[in-house]
Length: 424
Image 1 (cartoon, rainbow, N blue to C red):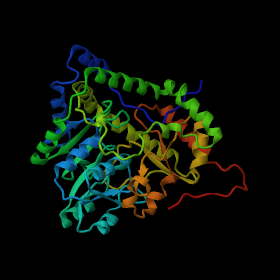
Image 2 (spheres, helix red, strand yellow):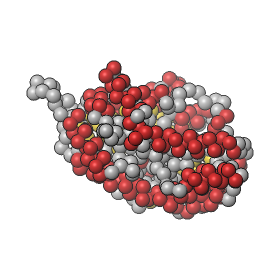
Image 3 (tube, rainbow, N blue to C red):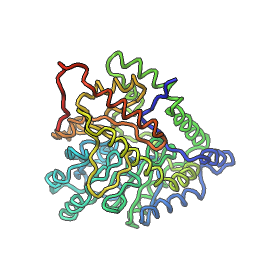
Image 4 (cartoon, helix red, strand yellow):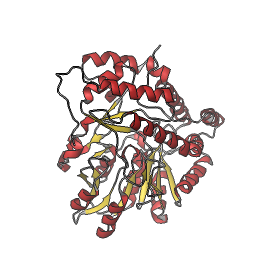
C-alpha cells in the first residue's frame, strides 16, 4: 500500500497524553500547579519575566491590545499576509487595521513599507513571523522607536525561531503564541502572552483570569478529540480519510477541500463564548513536556527543510523559501513559489503527497476589512505559493519521496509546452 504524506504532522511527546487524561479523571485537569510552572518555564525559555496562559493565541493578542489603553480609532499596522483573526481582534476593540505589503523573498512584513505607512494615528506594529521565518526586526524596531510606537510580535508560527541570536517574541513590548494542535508547541489549544513589562503583564493576567474555567468534561473531550485528529493526519489515518477525498476531488478541479474545515471568516463582535475560557492544568502538563522537546523538534524541521531545498535545487519553475541572513527559522511551513501551482498540487496529491495551498489570508482584500482596503500587490500575488511537508516526524525516505514527487510534477510534458516561470 502506498504511504501517503499529509501536509501537517502534529507534534507529540510520548507519555504526555495519558498523564493529562489521568489528571482530568482524578479532578485536577482544570485547575492546578502545572499552569504556573508552564508559564514560568515558558518565560524562562525566552529570557523574559512574564508569561500568561490563555484560551487561544488570538485571545493573548486581544488582552495585550486591550491592556494598552490606546485611543479609539488608533491605527495598528499588520502585514497584508496573516491570519485574518488577528487584525479582526484589533477591529473588535475599535482600532483600525492598516495593512502593509510584504517582502517578496521572505513573505514577512516589509520594513520599508512599514515606515511609509506610519501616520500620526499609528500606535502599534504587529509583525507576523510567518511560517516560522523571523521578520527583519532591527528596522522594524528602529521605526517604532523613531515614532514612539508599540510592537507586538505575532509568534503563532515561530516558537523557538531566532533573529541575530535572539528568540523572536523578545524584541517588542509584548508577543503572543498559539498552542493549537498544528502549531510548534501543541497543547490541543491555548496560547500565551509574553512580556517584560510587569504592569502590562498584570493587566493581561487580570483579563485572562476574569474568564470562566471550562468544565472538566469539556477538557477531557478537547484532549481526546485532539489526539484522534492527530492520528487521523498520521500516515495511516490520512490515507484512509482525507487523502481519498483529496485524490478523487483532484480529478474535478480544485481538490483542496480543507478550506471547509477552517474557521469561517466573519465579524467576531461579540467574541464567541468558546474564546472566553481559561487555560487548563491538563494542557499545561502537556505543554511542560512539549517545551522540553521544542528545540529538538525545531532542529528536525530545519534539517528537513535543508534537505528539501537541496533536493529541489535547479528545478525549473520552483523557488524554495528564502531565509533572511542571521536568522534561524523553525519551518512551521516550507513555502515554495511555483510557476504552475495548480498542476503541481494535483500531480502531487495523485502521487500521495498532500501540498498546502495558501495557508494564511490576504487580509487587505477580504470583505471583512473592506473599510481598510489598501493595495498590497506582493501579498496579492501569493497564490503562486505552496507549502510542502517538512515536519519533524517525517523520515528520510518520506523527504526523498516528497522531493521526487515535486521534481516529477514540474517536468514539462512535451517539447511544445510553453515554459513557465514564477512571478518575481
